[in-house]
Image 1 (spheres, one colour):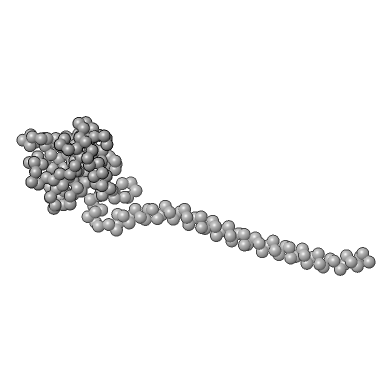
Image 2 (spheres, rainbow, N blue to C red):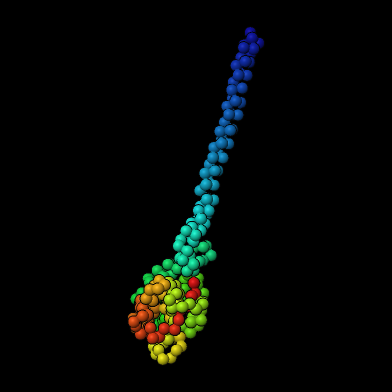
Length: 207
């Protein structure tokens, strides 16, 4: 009797074993597929991010106006910073004039220009005399935003560098510049029609 019961149960046990094995085998591909899908999503969130940033930097240069790309100081990441440099310089308006000053507490003329340029990694020297030789000379008509404008000191008869500022006007316009003046601190002035016209010495392109 026991032998007969064992013979009857054997197929049932065998069937359960086969079903259990089939379930395990079916689960493996599903788990494997899920792992691959999440691995793919993780990659999409990381690697393309760096690629997108690089593409944006390239677009900033290649899709902008050619004149803008030509005039701009370009940093190591390929980012055009001329507009940012000018914007930063203008945020310092109202800062008092301090002889020898190079910080937000107060600037002299060359302390202001060197501070602004160096904030953006543009290599310029410290004094108005040496800044008058930084970069390359360009004509007055070619003056554009970011250029360095050089003047005499308060006596225009002494034709030696004594004052500097940063041009903010476009080529062909009346030259406007931001500078730290002993009369009013950091402010905007223009060349034509003012005492700065008589004191004008030249334009230096440092970007």
